[in-house]
Image (cartoon, rainbow, N blue to C red; front, side, top):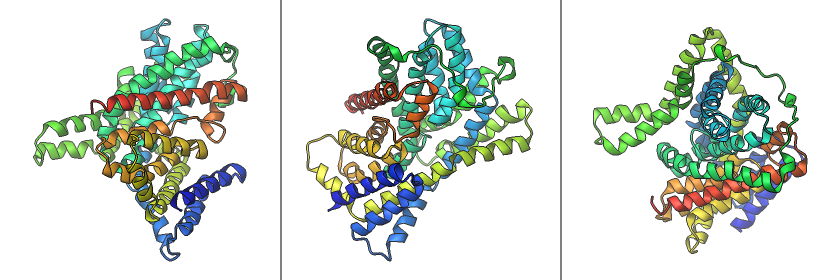
Length: 444
């Protein structure tokens, strides 16, 4: 019965979102109510369960996402992202242009969500591709692959941050091990896949692409942008603070004054706050912006992620109903008796949800709720489970996700070409990520 309830819930959610075009947050809440009733949760307790799920899921995540979006907005609007990409491409040159794009995308991808990073980077690589006479997709694949890996694997992005919260895994551990796993994943899904695709399906590598679909975007003159060093530091400061704190946590004695200060500064909430204050000066006041202008940019960034926060909350409601209804325990007991690796189980469940639901964030949160018991009863490092869920959430991006349509329009592809290039690429990212995680599990 629990599995039938989940299946009914997933089918209902897909129908509401795809067939009736109902808002994703509303669809999630409706689905949570229906599944809760099927699972036998008392009607009087069901609203409390859903409220608990929404509130518990958002909690401090709202702080991280809010501050993160503000920092990313300041970085992109003042040309910091442009400066990073331009300088790295200048350093690496034409022969190693893909490496330059990957490094730039990785730095910018840590600070910006996938869709925002795409909009920031695309005009830059469009100009570069035109200057060096390369097809836009030749640079677009390593860029999109890198942004997608960062979005799926690395905090403070929504899915890995939310999953870490559900499974009670320190964000710093996910970040450090996630970077190690991300490197081979990006190499395989970026340059290697790019080379393979160009051999077997060259027609998608078009040179005459018009990116006016992006609408109005600001073109920067390089001398108007912040310096390279300060731009990189601003983008990476949250990662630096969280990473240093995680490393020192293993070195410093517990309970000491220095240890407590480091733990405080490197906690995700405080690290994001410090980084945002730093960005207010480096990307705001020092660029001649008034506090009013900076405040307006911050407000605008929060408006952009408001619906995403609600969707995450809706995912939390669905998750809580599955937990309170005994589904998570049932799944945990079911797979706990099998010989299948918990890493593969976590990846498989999330990949199926991703194909069905479209949203990587919703798939991740729902997948995490279904494997909580597996994590509790397993000897596998829970960080690897978080990353496996992240890898599964990237699998087979298709027509039920906004990213699919963005790639199609931005790169001037037909529907068939988008399936054969982008959907295939996300499968490669997901599978190579899973392989990298399995290799890492031999040492961690």
